[in-house]
Image 1: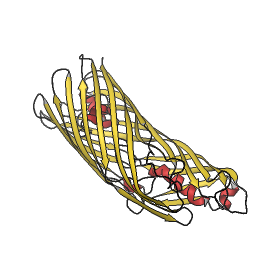
Image 2 (image 1 turned 135 degrees about the vertical axis):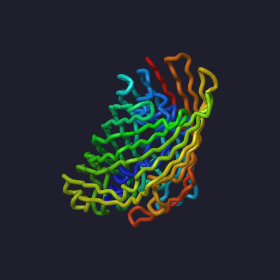
Image 3 (image 1 turned 180 degrees about the vertical axis):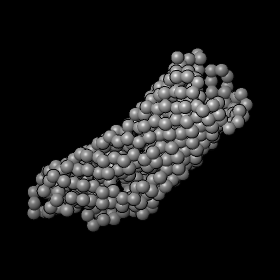
Image 4 (image 1 turned 90 degrees about the vertical axis):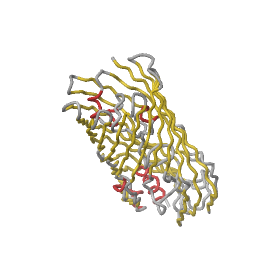
Length: 425
């Protein structure tokens, strides 16, 4: 019994997906509030402020003044769980996602007409989910919190007024704490279910590279490549109140744990076209190689109990597939101070109907965005954005001899709010 629940809990470390994130899988889009307002349609071609460090490092060549951008996005998700059935009983409130904050900060300094340097701190991946303690699917999913924070020093070079390139290594820190419930023999006993808690972390290196082309006087094309990042998470597995057989008392133990995880590479292609002095339109597509996530392998070591129960090596199938996201957007310059934005995007989920669980009850999604930029002076710009996400309804149907049967229909939506400040020296 314990074996099944540890597998489920550690499996979350690589699935990580949650409805509060406005991108597919466990990726987070919110690295730019100005881009958020246009639905990230011109992510690799707009280069409107220092957040281009993340969107397309080649865009730093367009920024002719030293500047920094700082901001944050808040994401609130809402989940309705209908037609819930469980052979082991429990509730299905649906309030599994807490309010999530996503910070960001960037700095760019032009050195001359050709070279620029900069750095960024942002969150490319992450999740936080927390079901109620009596959740009907608690043996399949409970509480999870995982985040990746990236620091990216960056350099760009402009060959001429038409073409620039940029590249920067990414130093990525991942941390996670994952919890699951396990069914005890002769349940209920004093203390009820057992609990499995896993904590782990690692730091790994990748890179972000891009090219920006001024195709015509009014049209820019951008292409950005975000590399994969290979992690080896080290931590521990703590088991509390485990009772594998009715004849045994409940006991606790701790084991070392490790997990290999690769966050996928992605390619973003977009355009920015200025129709006139007031109107600008954007479009773009992003491909993400989620098919890297075929399965996971967890190694538990340093504890005889874990070994005796067959928990030395655990493998769980995921079978994710590559995804595409497409976006269109527009900006209207109302006057010298105000710019209004809007955008619409569609985003595939990498999960499949066979392996979907309460950990990852997500489907394809549509996102509508609004935004505004306010520049009271030539040096200062305040950006605001709002996004509404609606997912297709999805079904979860799972059954196990050790975890019982659980089925339900999930209706997921989310609201995203962002604000940022850009100051030019």
